[in-house]
Image (cartoon, rainbow, N blue to C red; front, side, top):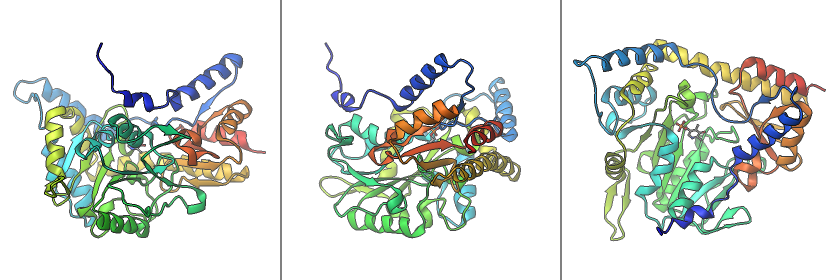
Length: 404
Ligand SMILES: *Cc1c(COP(=O)(O)O)cnc(C)c1O
């Protein structure tokens, strides 16, 4: 019989959202008339921007004509999209990122999960707590950690992110090779400012470490002093890889498109000490294991990079961020301490009791579904995440229910 990769068995079986779904289903079965509002899962609800639909419709027509039909595309992504990303997201903001440093993918989850493959199995990783589960779980699967002991994997350097440190973890006193940072953060909805990021870039430079910077929610930043890209920090091009996605920016969660930025001069080293550009390794990985994102989807993604496209995604994001404001205000009025929701579609509220207890209370007393913070890591205990991705109507209704 074939032997399995036993690292998979180190992962806890009970998937967070499966457990939430189970509790909601049970409650609904016992209370068939309860009108449950789901502010739990981080998926968007509003339709794609018109510019994207038009571009994808035109691309479908191209696929139906032998003269314009496309087969396999470039593994790195079409130049028309990479050029637009470089121009609109970086160069227009004074940041030095070129099209050939961008790699298009079918979403950021895969990129955040796959990137660890290009690093040594012996790399020491530092990871936030609470955290988007993908960073940690993929390293567990790869065998880069020990076993789970008291909610933490052995061998991993955890970075507690709590109200006490303003969700702004300091770099560790020990050496690590890889650092996962996510800002604006899922699940806490908080951000790292320039000073905090500069601290991390300095640490990475001193330790020859690489920062894996997840900026999936960059488009949700409203405060002027919060960096939208790690490359706003001097020296970051030598130490950081950035991940972005069209999922939350343009409603592409079901359409699938994301990208990775790996600067030309960013290197890792062999055990013999030879410097190797990380970009070359990623290109090799992608050309071997990935055959590109659909042409139609890349055309849809490229459509957001025009004045009209930007106005349409702005409207979409404003819709969700107005929900975020409503949730923040509603919770505060009901006496809760809340974080996030200003530069991110997530509101992280202090539960003052175990987060699963609070989850049950919210479900049974108010018929509102959130996500227990403990599901994102031990330091998420005592918090609960609500998302602003619901409809306006449901968001208002949910906050109305919390009124005393
Ligand atoms: C939603 C999300 C992503 C993007 O995922 P896709 O695979 O592009 O849909 C990446 N990182 C975080 C933290 C997210 O919440």
